Image (cartoon, rainbow, N blue to C red; front, top):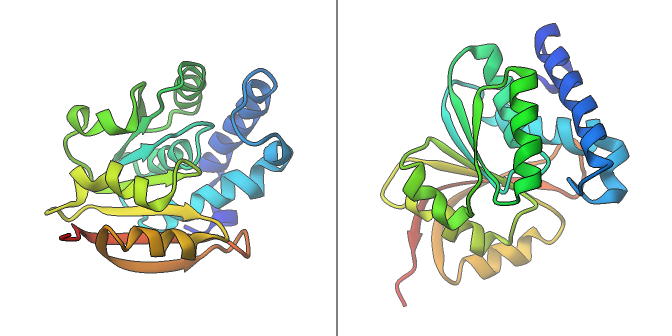
Amino acid sequence: MSMQNVSRETRERLDIFAALFMKWAKAINLVAPSTKEDVWSRHIWDSAQIFNLAPQAATWVDLGSGGGFPGVITAIMMAELGDGWVHLVESNQKKASFLRVALSSTGARGSIHSIRAEDAPAVIPECDYVSARALADLDKLLGYASPWMIGRSSTAFFHKGRDYQKELSKAHSGWDFDLVKHQSSIQADSVILEIGNLRRRMP
């Protein structure tokens, strides 16, 4: 599924989401204010890239879902498949309220867990994929995702900006992992890091 070539039904769901996002973003800080007006390219299509890397029915955990990126977008894409599920983890109550409205209004396949990322594995014991965008540096993200990934076949997809090489260097001091870098087709200086076979480094 290419990003600008989604079905009419999916586009309608995304339109509903975008309108809700703009309404709620006036009252609560869903994303950086400077990026709010460019919701389609900066956030929606950028988030859709993650689903396009694994476009099949699956169970996702989206950490720090915030304004719905990429978790709600993945859940909307999943609605077209009629299968799969996205567990959105967001500890901020106001953002969690927005996410609940967004899921119910769009018919997206997901649910909200208003808990901290480090508490999520106890509530969601298994998943196929882990995603996160603008939540924490890579070293910390790997710590959050490790209960689903170490000794398992789960894969992580993490959006990262221009400083991703520094984050990779830091993360490699404590972790070993397989890495595929996907260049963002939306933002020239951004990548999506696909991470698998996660192991802790022995001291």
